Amino acid sequence: MTAHIPGYTYGTAEVATSPISVDDFAKLKLATLFGDDDVRYLKMSHDVLKGQVEEILDVWYGFVGSTPFLLHYFTKASDGQPNMDYLGAVRKRFGQWILDTANADYDQNWLNYQYEIGLRHNSIKKNKTDGVDSVPIINLRYIFALQVPITTTLRPFLEKGGHSSEDVDKMQDAWRKSVLMQVILWSQPYIRDNQF
Ligand code: HEM
Image (cartoon, rainbow, N blue to C red; front, top):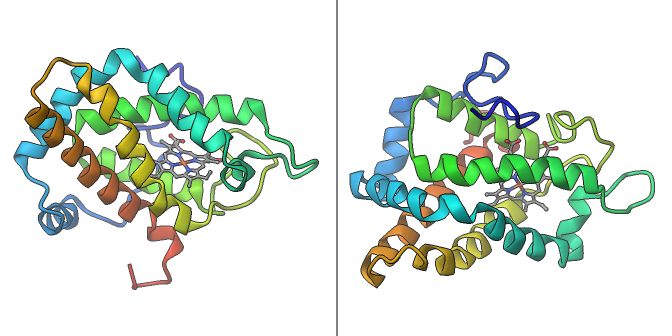
């Protein structure tokens, strides 16, 4: 179904095993007060968001594209200009990520792909998936920071599903917790041994 997205290797043997187990992740869920209701509200958001993925990406890419110190991470090392092919290739996987996040299916495959996404932001794997010559690493501080614009700008899209404002609040809260847990998982390759 999603095999046509270049570089999207979720659930394949190409993805390394996460150092985080399903049991470890269960504790992270408890620590962020993420419960079964959050899974339910994420799945509710799936139906609301699935027809709006391109519009959501337009907003997120608009933000990154108009913020030079963020667009920097998509530029070519040779001339410092944005690499449009790189932006386009990552955009497709980002769209799939919206649906995967809303799908909220937390098995070892999901954890392994979280590990992969962290490696792809870090110098260990950045640029390799798309074979590009861009800057070598995304600084961790901005990965944490982007949780805020990503989950804030999602709200108008969540509102379009015709659900009550209470349900919209709960979908947005579940998204906030999910993205927080994901960026925590992605930070792992950035943290010195045994300190994660
Ligand atoms: C909450 C924060 C963030 C989220 C949710 C996010 C999401 C994603 C996703 C889903 C992908 C594609 C993963 C895949 O290959 O399947 C990706 C890749 C990428 N992101 Fe982020 N990201 C975040 C922070 C950032 C920041 C701050 C930057 C800096 C501009 C950034 C730049 C990139 C780049 C350049 C890639 C491609 C990496 C590669 O070479 O493979 N991301 N991101």
